[in-house]
Length: 315
Image (cartoon, rainbow, N blue to C red; front, side, top):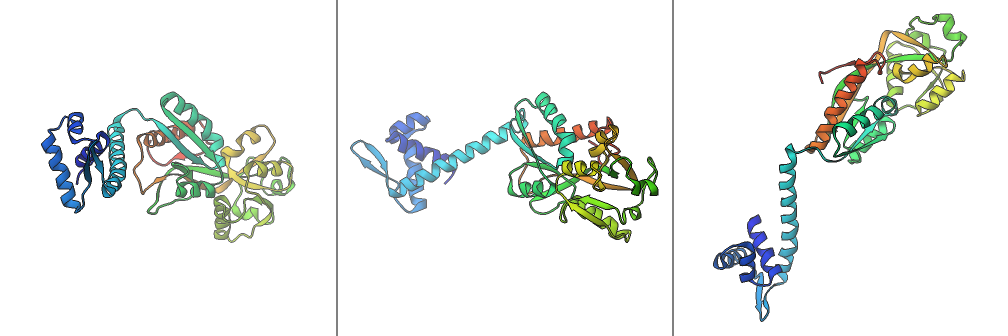
C-alpha cells in the first residue's frame, strides 16, 4: 500500500460509494475499484461490503480507516513542514538560560527576536545550569546556553564565548585589602582562609572553583552555600564573605561602589556553550533563533556588556 491508496480508501468510505469517490477524486471508477481489490489482496481480508445505501467498511476496513487517516495526516504535515523550510520562520521556540547569562542576554535577545523574527514566539526560561540541562534533555526547551560541554546522542554543544571570573567582596574588607590593594590582581592561593559564599557542590560554578583550588593545592573555606547569584551578591555586600562570579555579573554593583572586585592572575575563565538537540533536526524557527542568539552575543561582547568576555567562534 502507498499513501495514494490510503487516500482513495478514505474517500470511498467517507463518500459511501465508489462512484461518488471517483467523482470526488477525479479518478476513473474501474481504476478505483482495482485499487481496493489490490489492497484487499495484499492484506488478505475484505475491507468493504455493499449495502443498499452503498459501500461500508468491514471491521478490518474500519481499523484500516483509522490508521489511514492518521498516516495521511502525518504525511501531509511532513509535506507542509518541508515546503515551509525556506519560508519565514514561525512558531514557538524556548531557550533556557542560566541566571548570570539571562541578566545580560535575555532582554536584548527578546528585543532582537521581536524586531527580526515577528512570527516567532520566543520564550526565555531562566534557571541554574543544571536545571537548564534537564530541560534540554526533557525537551522542555529547544535551545540552551550552558557552561558545561555536553556531547551525546541527545545533545550537542559548541563553545561560543569565554568569560572572565573575578573575586569580589564588600568595600573596605580588611582580609583581602591586606593581601591585595584595590585594583591589583589576586592568585588562587589568596582565597585560602577567606570566608567564601558559593553555590552548592554539583553546581557548575562551584565545581569549577573547587577544581581550580585543587589544582593550586588550596583549601577553601565555604561558610555559605547558596544557589542564587542575587542572594550571593547581597550577602557579600553585607560583609558576610567573598565570592567568585563572572565580571559582568557584578559590574553594576562594582561601578556603584556596593562591591569591590579583583581579577585573578593567571586569568580565571569559563566557556559558554550553545546546546541544541542532536537527535532531531532543528526547525526553521529554531535555526533562526540560534543564529540570532549568536549575533546578539557577539554584539554584547563588542559593546563591552559582557565584561572581558571574548567570542570563541565566528558568528
